[in-house]
Image (cartoon, rainbow, N blue to C red; front, side, top):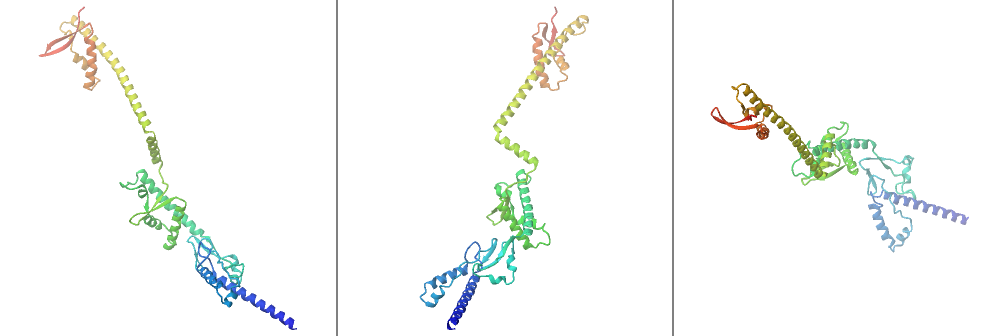
Length: 364
């Protein structure tokens, strides 16, 4: 009987120690809670490590006894996209929603917190993407990017006058506060300003992460946002393309233009010279014919003068040439040829009190 009683007492003692150890472990483990964000520790765990390092070096027999008990030294990792501090999960990041684990809905699920192999938090929640906020942020991002790209395109194409001395980034950028106010005025009335500010921050973060815009903080504290691309109209693209081609090939381009104008001028000069030769030849023939005709008429009627006045012939034959300079240029060539003709005699006569050159046919 005494042996059986001892065995029962031993079993009860061992069970009591096991239950106590488990409950003690559970209590110590659940106290640790979550690790800090982006860490595998927290303030509570750091303090515990320090205390038990001191306990391990303690000569006290009672403390030495407790040092043999298993001591939890691991906190539950902070869920992805969550913000954890001092063992507690504070909140999820702006674009995420806190979602409970399916196992956390089991009755008495919190009992498993701290149990060995379950961790300090047995069934931690998750931070799931806020699809509605994401959609709103994407919509805001589209409006922001479109506004910035149109502004940059207008500056590049000259639609907006650029102040002298401004760098490209300053000229292409817009104040973040101005764009925020502009887009905020378009938001749905059901969205509060606080919610919109969160959506705005998320939209700009996504645009920056996707390398679609840059931020520039000026000396006066103003924050500028600049699109990396620009919305440029078709006509402006053509002008820019032509400008780029001309800049790249300007030497060849201007050489080609010079050759073209040189060729055009030379061709025009050749054609003009050819036309002048033909016209001079016709005028020489007409002038000589007039002088000869006058001589024949004089022989038939002596009252008709036997000579012709060159200037009268000039004005008669070149009546279609209105430029006096051009008329004189052509006539000087005609007169030179006529005067060299063996059948033409140039005389000077006094007509109406003035000495005048005349052409007269030489009698054969």
